Image 1 (spheres, rainbow, N blue to C red):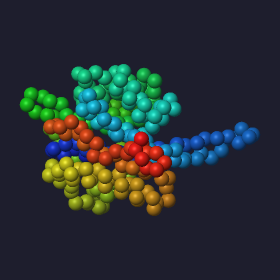
Image 2 (tube, rainbow, N blue to C red):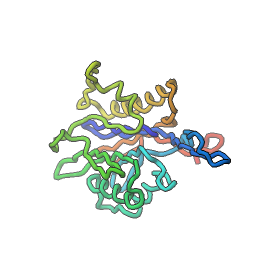
Image 3 (tube, one colour):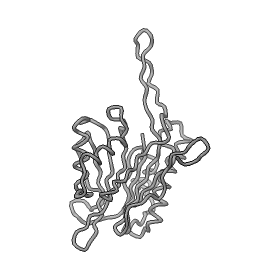
Image 4 (cartoon, helix red, strand yellow):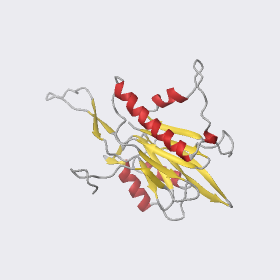
Length: 243
């Protein structure tokens, strides 16, 4: 499981994710009987936020993470090298990504946020898409229903129950609103980190699988400058030296 979030405000888009990879081990006893499934952490150093630098597009991945026993990161690299060209942009990538993965994994329970800007005339239009491989679904998130009017907010995926309980109103418990339209880039970065970190820290104390954790990666995509990493984990050697 994972937790990823994409925050879209008037001056840019912030994408963040945790780094934990959990796997479920299924075994059999010597006499062939199935043994209880064991969920365990296989890594705290998995990338779930990716930058397609040529297209200036960010991707968050969540859900099923090992397709054909290969990480999503490896599939995204192949997709970028084998499918995309310099003419692709945030509006063409979602369909190409889903078609690429459905060739070999049509039932995969893997999902993505794809986000970036497209220049139309004198305007840079923000796009945030939700994509699901198994459902063959692509849905734009940052427009009002049944319109093309851009709205601001946040969308998240994976282990989302904790952040949803904090910010989403219910019939019995209304919540003070978040004024996304007035949020700055720094506020969006802070909120994205808060959402991931709060999920990690809350799960630590709950009697549940600890399937969100590790460092928090944060990517900023804006209309007027190249995308850049706000923070991203790095490879290190035994003494903490960067490799």
